[in-house]
Amino acid sequence: MQDMERYRKDNQSGASETVLFKVKPHHKEALREVSVLLGEEYNMSDAVRFMVLPYLDAFEKAKNGKYWEGAITMTKGYSRLGELLKAQQKEVAQATMNFEEAPA
Image 1 (tube, one colour):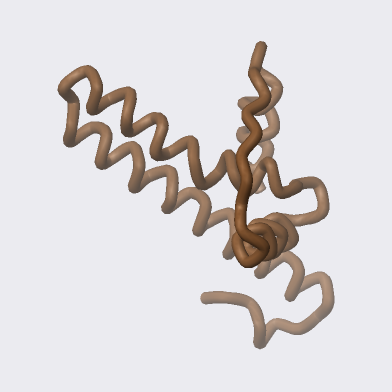
Image 2 (image 1 turned 135 degrees about the vertical axis):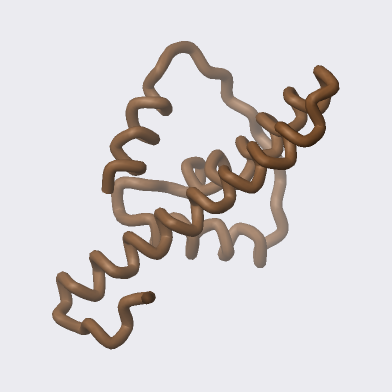
């Protein structure tokens, strides 16, 4: 779970600002589901960060004329989220000795 450790450190790396926004009930449920899949140490705010930050990083690159870097940055961010979700599912499946449910 090396990526999760890195995320925790990144998450604690300095000043941040709270941003509030409204979501529809089905989106809130999806965020809750992602946070559960990530593990009990993560909440819906973490799920939102995992999904939004790749877009913001890509925007920063594109704003500076680096469109390809922005696209690659966004793709890497979403790949990382997918890897974290798979790793967590595998860990849960192994902990419950249900190896059939672990993703390949």
